[in-house]
Image (tube, rainbow over all chains, first blue to last red; front, top):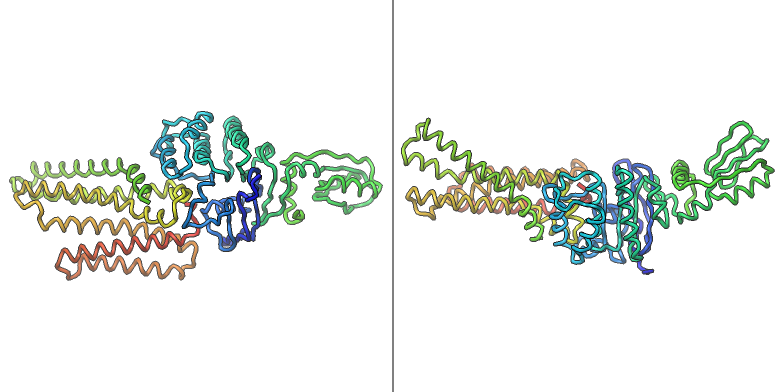
Length: 296
Length: 220
């Protein structure tokens, strides 16, 4: 694995009226896939735009493969592919003409790669962009982002609003891209089932700050939903993120199942039952917990 | 930079050609109607109308420029341009050069048609009246460039306070006042008026480029 991170955000701050992103310190190692999760308005898109150079932060630095992102020497953009909510394509041109336009600016552009991806995704090259469906537009964005063989891919909700079939096609292509371990992917989405298939790590953003960063597998291993019976009234349970009591039965969501179970046994709890949580349930619990979840 | 301009011209070429075709069609129609129903029935009268042909060509070109600026904004072009491995300064310059290129293409056509009409009329093909065509084109280009500058001032207003954008607003107002002065003021030499309008156009373009480079948001 390359020792230079795919990107590094160092103390990045971006202020908008009523919202401040950061200070944000975040790195993405080459060859890894990180899911970027957060509620609407938490600053996910702004973060991605800061990395892509579309938003200039007020403080801090952004590096892409060890190179400071600046507007004078934009060679770092050759390492970057971005799929965002908006695209900027020439709507009066066909898909092929738009791809040809891009090919004229990227030294690493490969027509063969772009055509193969377009074929793989069933993208009609001869169709005007203005006539494309939302699904085809997302596919075009994917081909446009990958045509020059970037080592870092920033994906801002690339499957939002797509039907399950198109979403599966797009994700399949991402899988293929990942076969080359050099690629790093930073994937912002609300569709957590997409991430659960791809991501190594998950980063949770809340009100402009990183709330939690954890390997995905560690989350699914540690987080548990536990119910138990205890005659005491409300109890403080170790590692509980959520607590609810229904008559004699207590229910907790724990971010460290083992620690909670040990504690409950010490308390003399009975009828202890635990169940695993899906990544969606964990994400909801983390984001509902907001600042109560301890950063790791 | 030039690649960006070239690609832009390639994209808006059809808009420009359609605008010219409409302009010439309407101009010919008006000339025919004048010949049939109006007072301009003599041959010389018709020629006097015909030599006005640069004006519709220039107006058609400026319409194409405004369609271009609206389309660029509507299609969020800045986003894809800023994703390209091209320095921000070059993107900024290309954005002001594209309408200039469209306008210059219109100017070349206007001059060519004007030369033909003058030749038919019997005037020397390189008449001093060509400077009038240049002056009209440069004045129209000023308004296209001013529209781009206004967009950048609005962007500045969004990221700075109202008073912070005051200097930029004042600069634009002064530029408009100066262009009005050049058009309506006591300057008699057309050469001087053309030169002053070129300077004003260039100043507004430089102003737009400078504001674009200071932007902190290129998402729309």
